[in-house]
Image (cartoon, rainbow, N blue to C red):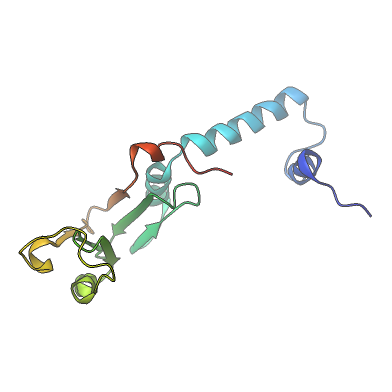
Length: 153
């Protein structure tokens, strides 16, 4: 038996969820809505939707294959989450324990410091503690203007 490829394969997969009796216009509207939702809901919006409906207490890190080269979300609700920035080392650490993000203090950058300064790293490091009681999301975006277009293949 020959394996289906391309559009016919996609439609065969979609047929499991959409009745074959559906009108062509309804199917086209469904497909258009699905594609729009994919492109309109970025990482921050998706994490916000997740937090609205999630139960329990947690700290999470969320990334997407579309923007993995430039973005990550860190969120907390009911559990501490800390993010530490080490600009001289080009390093960001995150974790649910405040002490865990200190790991960057002992990290030796193989290429040396990215920013030369007379101060040691502890003077340049910054720690951000997310609001675990009210819930908070931090979007870290280290992209550049040339990264404005997502890396879609």
